[in-house]
Structures are given as structure tokens and as C-alpha cells.
Length: 102
Image 1: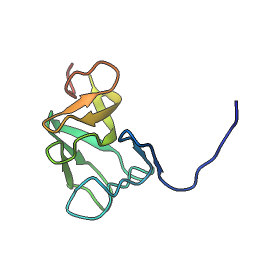
Image 2: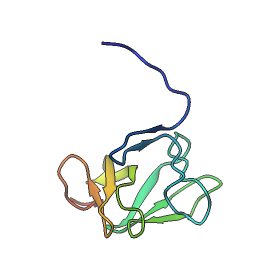
Image 3: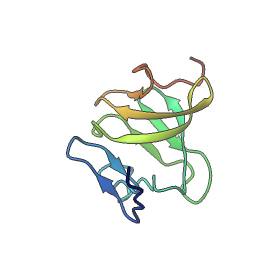
């Protein structure tokens, strides 16, 4: 199997976007999921940047269908990948809504 390194976003035809995600709408042009911020759970439909220069910015699942994000506390306060179904952020591993408690 080949080993490949990418320096920019990787886009698949079925909706996965790796690296900085210009398709997600936070009020600015980029969610910076390329590695310099982490989202935290506000509720099942909204995540927030908790620290840094972008602290307090939110990202809604509404309007971001098929966007994939990393949530620092999305599975019982543990990290999880999540995707938007257009209404809520769903954990990739089990399809449940993101939650700090379950």
C-alpha cells in the first residue's frame, strides 16, 4: 500500500473534506480544521471554539450537511469525529448526537 502525504485539503466526491474546510459557515471563511482549533460541544446542534483567537465562535449543524469535524468532548467528554445531518452533529462511531455526557 502506498504512503501519501498531502499538504492541502483532501476532497472526496462523497462529501468528506479533510483539512481546512471552506464549506462550513462560522461567520468567517474557514473552520480551521486543519489542526489549529478544536470544537467543543455546546449542544447537539452547535459546537464552539473554546480557546484561542477564535474563542466563542460557533458552528451550527444546520446548513452544514455532510461536513465532518473533530469535537474534543463529543463522546462522554472524550474526543470524537462528528458529521452534520443538517439538523444535529452525529458521532461517526455510532450515529448518536454528540454529547458531553453520553
